Image 1 (cartoon, chains in turn yellow, purple):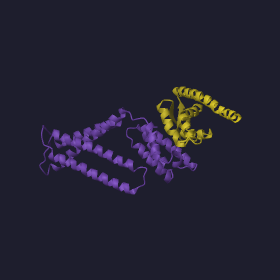
Image 2 (image 1 turned 60 degrees about the vertical axis):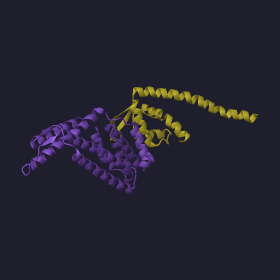
Image 3 (image 1 turned 30 degrees about the horizontal axis):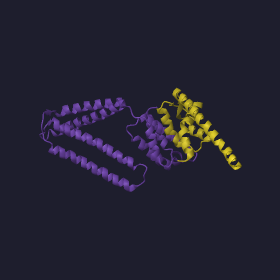
Image 4 (image 1 turned 90 degrees about the vertical axis):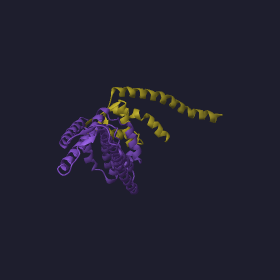
Length: 117
Length: 223
């Protein structure tokens, strides 16, 4: 598995919860929104096992209702537990991204020192 | 929407798929439906979502392979891993109904055969309770086994296009049917006749069978 897909795999739950928090969506809409957000390499099918797992954990719930285009679709809503989980994920993510970013930014500087030697 | 409606809707919508997508999707559908321990409602809901997604993707020129990946079995397995199990509350009445159904038919057929044969020959309306129970149980177990065996081959015939394998599988299932039926005959022949005797005249057998069958239907409906 490539580095990118490994990272994505770990954070995809959070990404999906964040999309659903904004607005209830059905599967196809969700995959379109992920693509629009720039995560086009999340293959469309992968969202369904994730949706099922998040449902099982009680973070989201599905409900059949008519879609904008007409036919019934299963829309996913964030539950209270889901909101809580998303908050935790965002917090944890921040704790990783910040320090990692700092470490990576230092790289250029170290190189500069080296060339000075 | 309950699972029955979802299945009907699925049958109608599936006709809109291209031949290639239909083959890919139908294999996945059968494979998931053959997992009997899974909640039927949850299975049908996700199957409908996948079908809706595929139909929308098809409009944009995508294939099932583009959407669900090159390995439909692995994808279906991943879905199955996340699906909830059927609640025992609805499995027990279903199986009980099935067994009552079988017993009901046994008595009805027995009653009918004796009823028809009686005017012509001298038939014995008594039977030994214990050996008969053993034989009926063996038949029930064998039916269960054959159902499992056949579904096992259906499952293994999915996601493959080898005709030769299908031909071989048919032969295996046929062979196994002969063996299981032969086993019943052998047991019936060699089983000693012992224990208490019960006499059920043909019309009592017919009526009791009908009653058991009706109860079975009722129990099954409650599932």
